[in-house]
Length: 193
Image 1 (cartoon, rainbow, N blue to C red):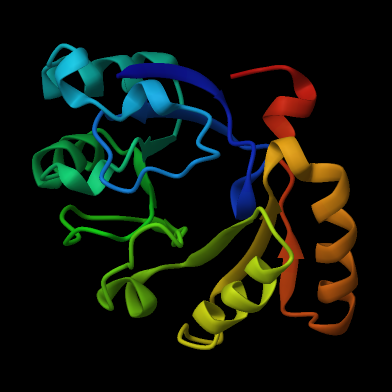
Image 2 (cartoon, rainbow, N blue to C red):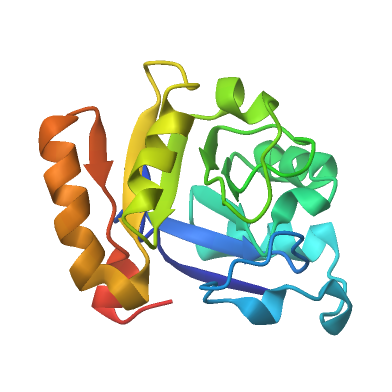
């Protein structure tokens, strides 16, 4: 769908320069999604792996984040191999609804209530990031955290349109559950992509 060089705005790598490849196609359909234009893969032209990896390499970024839509709808083996050959770290942002393909340095697993994730993501992910749109999402996030290895990085992120209300609930919870962190969409506060 699009590529851009910016800073990672969320989670464990917030603030780090990163090149983003946003793949089109999504089978989850979150009502609060801020990139609904990514849902229909047929509305976006195909781009070659060579042109994508060249763009990442030319940007100077050492990190490439593959996101979506839902990027795991695509076989990511060839793309991640090409990026790794160029010495670029591969990061994935996924809801975990499809089989994992590719070689990953970092996997951000962000399950959604709209479609259940596959079990493989609990053991293979480095980071759990749950969007908090309603107070009930906090307990739902903890249910997922309970299935993850202890060394996982745990983040709750307020849905952007409800951030003032949800941040207060998240902060109250993480003060009592100190393995969690809050993730705010830094890039939106900075006004960058």
